[in-house]
Image (cartoon, rainbow, N blue to C red; front, side, top):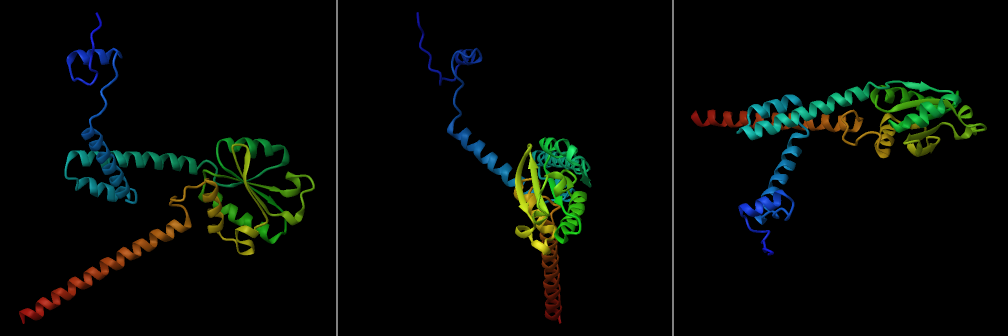
Length: 252
């Protein structure tokens, strides 16, 4: 005899059937869906609030937490942040300098290496003004972004018959392919190319996250924010002082 079962009923028998996969799990109630959406929104808002805080500021927020759940949320975020910073520090120490390579080394040091990281190649030309400029920027960038590999090779050695007029050439490798190519510095600052121009290339190709604190633009933004906060605090102090002076005058 076949017994009809309402899978939406909340009964002990249905629980047994669900445990054995005979009937599907009950769909979440509308109120449960709404509660989960509200919780996700709250967590997203909280993560956004914490994202620009230093570890000392996070520690202070943790001390001021109103309940254990908020305290645990901040503690978990701090652990995750420290783990990410630790991993980034290991990556940043991976290279840290410009690697001169020869033609026989190119496959291993550039093409194959790009499976593990971004590789920037400077096809250089001795005594060329722009090549000297890019070479200097490569040295600075390599020290700053140790998780990116910077390589230098003379253009004619890398590619037989490569024209001097095309030097310097900047190649960006990832996953064995050339993702971006700049023939001379014409499109990235020319004779006036700066570190920020090279950093923009790194961001545009995805080698560096646009929110990376190592970027000059982000350091400047942080300094401006700190100056704005200082000016705001200073203005608040001046207003408090004026209020105090007004109170003194009133007492007189």
